[in-house]
Each structure stands twice: as C-alpha cells, then as structure tokens.
Length: 189
Ligand code: AP5
Ligand code: MG
Image 1 (cartoon, rainbow, N blue to C red):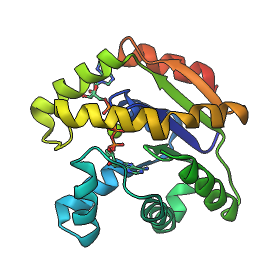
Image 2: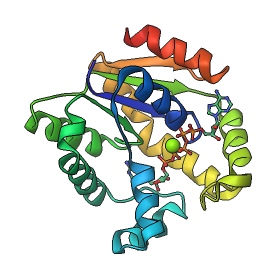
Image 3: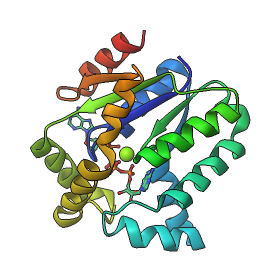
Image 4: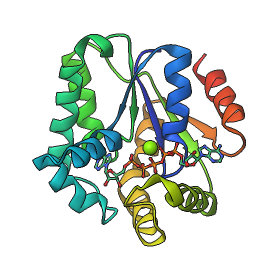
C-alpha cells in the first residue's frame, strides 16, 4: 500500500487514525484542513480567503483547493515518495478526478480508501466536545451542522465513486481508537 485516502464525515476520526497510520506504515500525512488552518494562523492571503469558507462550514472552491494540494505534493516530493495519507481530500468528485491526474503525473495512484463510518449523533458529540478546547472556529453547533450538510451533499457521493473502483474499505468508526485502528490494519494488510 502506498497512497491511502482516509475518508469520512467531520469528526469521524480521520486525523486521529492518520496519526496511527503514520506511525505504523511510515506514510506522509497531508491534512488539507491543517494546511488551511496553518495559513489562517500565519495570516497569509490564502488564509484570509480560506477563513471565509471554513467559518461558514463551506468547502474551499475546487480549483483553489486542487492547486494548494498540488503545491503541497511538490513541496514534499521526497517525503511523499514513500506514500501519502490524504486526510480531508478529496471532498468532491472534481477533487477526486484531479487527484487521480496529479498522482498519475507523478507515476503513482490511490491504492485504498479507508471510510470511517460513524452515526451522525456521535459525530456532533465528538465535534462539540473537542470544540470546548480546540479553538477551532468551526467546532460549534451551528457550523458543525453546516459541515455535516455539506458532507452529505458534496462529499458522500465519493463513497460510490471509490466503491466502483473497488478501492473503498468501510470501517466501523465506533469504539476505542485502538479498536478502530485494528480494523483499519486488518483491511489494509
Ligand atoms: P477538516 O480539517 O478536514 O475537518 P473535517 O473534515 O470537518 O473533520 P475533523 O478534522 O473535524 O474531524 P476528523 O475526521 O479529522 O476527526 P478527528 O480525528 O479530529 O476541514 C475543515 C474545513 O476546511 C472544511 O470544513 C472546509 O471548509 C475546509 N477544507 C478542508 N479540506 C478541504 C477540501 N479538500 N476541499 C474544500 N475545503 C476543504 O476526531 C474528532 C474528535 O473526536 C477529536 O476530538 C478526537 O479526539 C475524537 N475522537 C476520535 N476518535 C474517537 C473515538 N474512537 N471515540 C471517541 N472520540 C474520538
Ligand atoms: Mg481532521
């Protein structure tokens, strides 16, 4: 396995399980949410644009997001060679198609999509619990609701997209962090 997409709704555990995947498989982690939050923190122009969308629970436009991802891949060419965990990307069919092309241009491809499946009430619970200390502007009840709506409309169709390619691995995302990682490992190995 080289390139893995970790897929799931907001709060499903993508970041948490990415940490386990990095340690276990030695992959390079790209979280597009982290990349954008870093720009916001540094007050870049891109950060200012991104903040407008993130605070509303909306997606950054595809063209912009795809160019950001291409830049991250190019800036980390060596590290990315051993394989990448894509966390929070792709989020639309257009992003998935662009990712295929970006990877093909670099002589590689997506090997597996790990889909963390968690019921809606648990997602809200996790996001609000984290919101008490994360300082993330989008971890409040109103924005969390918007993020979930956007996920269902724009991102969840990717499950079918990757199922059709035979790459989607559904993972029960309920239980302890360790239990869930055991399930992921079982599928990937
Ligand atoms: P992003 O940063 O990707 O956020 P998200 O998808 O909304 O998901 P989260 O990071 O909130 O959750 P997660 O699945 O990583 O779960 P975590 O491990 O943290 O995106 C933020 C925004 O950026 C988007 O809304 C959009 O505006 C923009 N953006 C990003 N990428 C984009 C793209 N490609 N295109 C366009 N726009 C983009 O876990 C959540 C909480 O639960 C944590 O507190 C964790 O400790 C806890 N937890 C984890 N596992 C468990 C467990 N098993 N049991 C109990 N609690 C658990
Ligand atoms: Mg995350």
